[in-house]
Image (cartoon, rainbow, N blue to C red; front, side, top):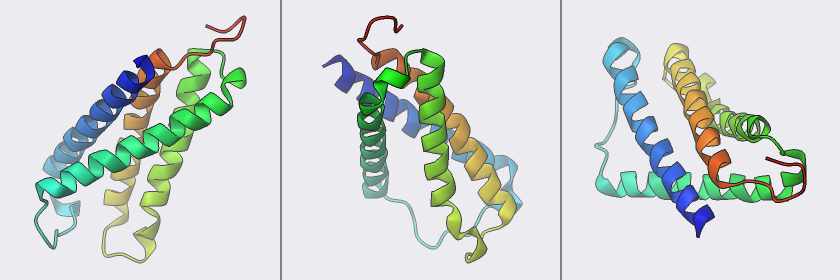
Length: 135
């Protein structure tokens, strides 16, 4: 139950920080924001939350599988940061074929990477190894 609560809290923080970061970036970089074709609905927000929860759930499962190597919180945070940032870069891989500017894509990637550091920190507080010598 503790791990599920941690997953839910981590997803909520990741989602909220993502929305706040997008709002801040679109406020200060108005000229780089891509033109949106259609309005964002409540369904889109719920779907995004569910997808983030799924990604964090899969990352937690992977972290459980390699937990013997992740014996310190620093290693767990770095593990989540690297995998989450990889997902962020993959999500923006179409920057060469889309009409979005490179600056906007880099801002999104940097913002998501910062978000994944916070996600890794929160997740490392809830998911801890149980083997001897780990903390």
